[in-house]
Amino acid sequence: MRLTPWVALLAPALAVADAPAKPGPEWSGVVGAGVIVLTGNAETTTMNGAASAQREAGGWILAGKATGVYGRTRPASRDEPAQTVALGATGQLRADRKVAEHVTVFALGGAETDHVASLEYRAYGEGGAGWLWLDRKPDAGGELFLRTDLGVRYTYDARWQYYATDVAPEGDLPDVEAVAPRAGLAFRYGFSEQVKLVQEAEVLANVTDGERWQARSLTKLTSRLFEAVSFGVSYQVAYDSAPAPGKVRTDTALGATLEVGF
Image 1 (cartoon, one colour):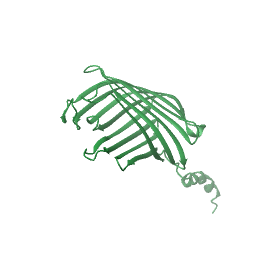
Image 2: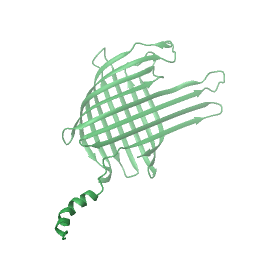
Image 3: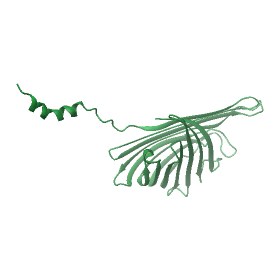
Image 4: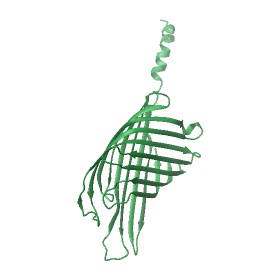
């Protein structure tokens, strides 16, 4: 029996069946942590952590990020009790859908807590559009990314005075709701394969319940040490024109972290 014609016809199908399946898009991201511990005449412990991940597939861009910070200090005087100087966390999920080469529509949601700022929790959701001005991948000669956002965000702040002040005793505070247009910017630039700059910023202007402005900025520089391990230095600024009673309008944070990419 001659099988040659049949083998010739079936060969392409057999080759396709034997070919390994193409790997689907995977998540990429980074996890980092930092700690400062002082002992002796004064005792201070500060810890922070952050994680972010992103996946792009089928015209969708999915991203998530989370941060946390804890700090406690005991003054030099042994008679004074230890004080909490930082206790907060944030988390956010975002989904972008490409509707054109450089245009996306997005929806995001998140939650925050910051006991030192008298924020029991903040829940928010937002919808809007983004414009991709630059999107050069790292394997194309160095990463270069620039995106701007325009959206509308709803925010609900549940406030609680965790640490009494002269202005507000410990206890419940009035909750705050806000609807605010938001303008945002995300920028990443790879100086080389080892060094990268990240800049994020946003401004929100409340249009309900009186005038309130909020602004945030993050500047971060990372340098790869070896393989997937990097060292990063960041500087954050958060401004709120109407903070909780007894709280200042501007918070800043300078931090250093050791990061692992995946």
